[in-house]
Image (cartoon, rainbow over all chains, first blue to last red; front, side, top):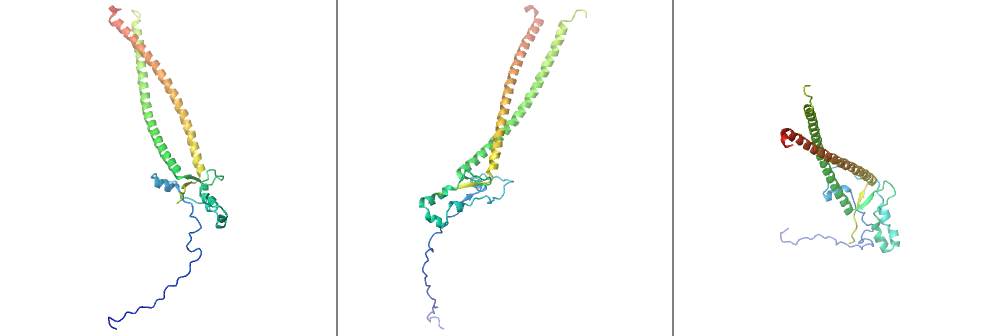
Amino acid sequence: MSWFSRKKVPKVPFPTGHPAGEGALRFPSMRPEERVIEPAKVKEAVGLEMPSITEEAPTFAARRPLEESVFPREEQRAALPEATSRSGAARIPSFHPKAEEEPLFVKVDVYQRILGEIESIKTDVSAAFEASKRLETSEYNEEENYTKLKRAIRVIHDRLLQVDKNLFKVQGS
Amino acid sequence: MERMPVFVKIDEYNDVLAVVGSIRKKLDEAKETLLKISDLKNEEDHQLELWQNSLAELEKKVDFINHSLNEPEQF
């Protein structure tokens, strides 16, 4: 076998295309699941993350079956008009839950505002504690001054009595 | 693309509401206590003013006695 002999090309069969099916290039009919952000994640994102001892892992036991109520099934969706099926996502928040275990959904901006208010309340409470400490100190000083004043008045009273005694002392007694 | 609102799930929000209610109650109590303290402070200020007036009167009388004993010719 010389170096310049003709290269052997292996016989590879050309790929045979197969016809695309009806649903091959379609987007999935199921819409993605509604995004639920847990409070801890929002705190992280907002930058208000604080270590909490009582923080537990989120449970999804009480979660409502959103997919069932919000997104109708394929056969139901076909029967619905376009507008109705698109506005289905707006029905997610329920601010009047009936059962006690049902979770509450609030908008992210409202939630962030609530977190901000809580932080501001914490600051106010700290300021109130400081003011209380200062008041305690000042009240202590006030007590001390009252005691001094009472002592001074008593001394004045005693001295006055002494002067009175001296001035009205009967001659010869 | 349609903008979808994002919601945050709050579990056990009834507990949160109960805590907020108790905070409001405590806040009302604190306001009442502050009012009482304010009344007491006003009363205290009034008594202090009376005390100050009494001391001023006392000082005047002591001055009179002092002068009358030290410089009797002037009286």
